[in-house]
Length: 245
Image (cartoon, rainbow, N blue to C red; front, side):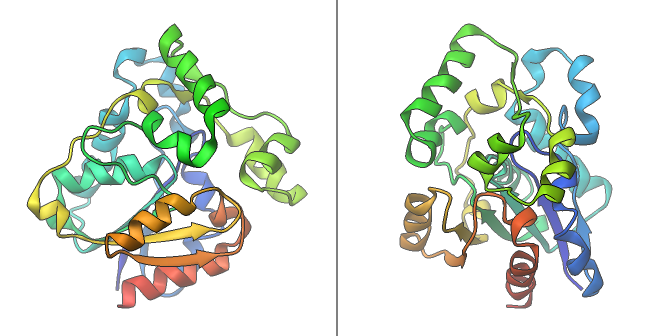
């Protein structure tokens, strides 16, 4: 039996795995899909916590706390998009609990890099400029998409039922999560197996190329940025294959 810990990306919550986690559980495995502080079903906490502490470190600690409180081991730790930052940081703090790191269209930062540093290659200069302006202006949150055309364009979520499910569950993203760098360097973390899942319509080709050059396994899904919504069967099967290797 494997243990999967599925970490969502920016503006999302644990809800986004609603079609991917069940096949993992049906195959006899454990699958956790928590929401990071201030997002998803924990969005209310964003109104109670000072914006200065709603940062990457807090999200890393969210996952570390879950690993420790549930005493999880041999975990397949999966991070989508922004959560590549999170799982990279978690690996530095709890390498002994992790069997594999899986980056699902996720950023793969080097030591000292922040999410904002990763965005130019995958989202282009205009998107980076908007995020940079939020950071420079001290805006505590970055607004979530609010219309079906927006999530179709940004994440290729085009099915009306999926759009209806996702739109009311999206949350503002704490700005400092994109500004704070991650620290790496532990040999134990560097030795953890890493896998990358590239979605063909997402702009993450450069990250996949870097992953392949670094010796990671690279897997492909012909879909947009949110495969856990648009291609959950393929994604869950890849995750099951990774756990079985």
